[in-house]
Image (cartoon, rainbow, N blue to C red; front, side, top):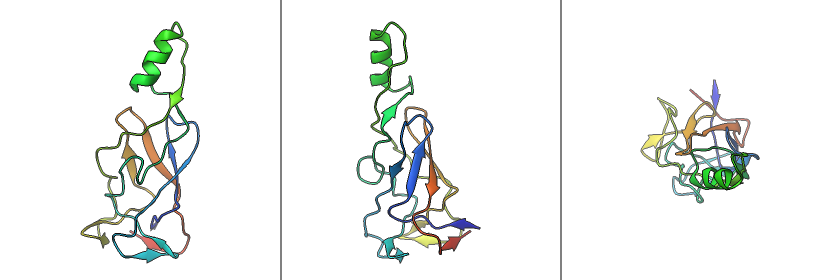
Length: 129
């Protein structure tokens, strides 16, 4: 069974150089492991999803222009995630704040081609389907 994700969860982007931390605002008023619980709508860049160090995706315009300026040598640039769509799929049976709860098997797509995954859910006691 999947684990419920909460604030403080560790995230990793497939094009990022370092892990990041999920920040969940306490708007849903549910806590798990003394931390605010997450739902699929906790995907806002620079609010919920913080940068992943340096980005290596050529779909990222800053990486593409820096790589072109370096005569085609891949030049990573700071990662500013762009995540317009919510996490998918979320929990089909647990609703939190009128949206499916976020579990550690959900993925989040970045506009620059990266897939953001949950490495550690932020707590170890709450399981959800």
